[in-house]
Image (tube, rainbow, N blue to C red; front, side, top):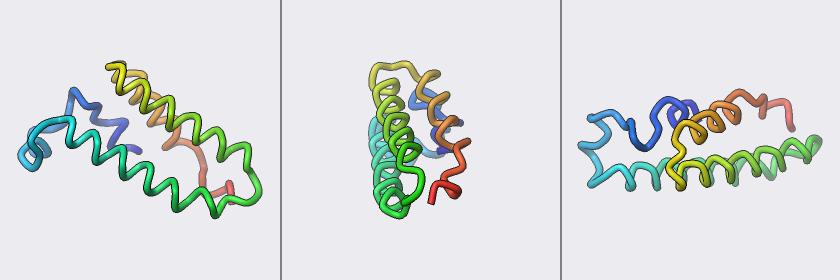
Length: 90
């Protein structure tokens, strides 16, 4: 999440662009990794189901913001997710 917060799709560092055909490929891979990781973490959350739902909502809101070109909002939401103490949600 911190990497997504740091580099929005319009600000990927040049070294990352060397390994992909375009920024969309980087974005798609980053978002896929977020979804895959969350799919592994979420089933382990047993106590704070409301907090897990909040993370779901924030991930969706982040995707929507980025897809609509609101990179600043997407980065802000990514940081909010990063700042959540997911470890305590178990």
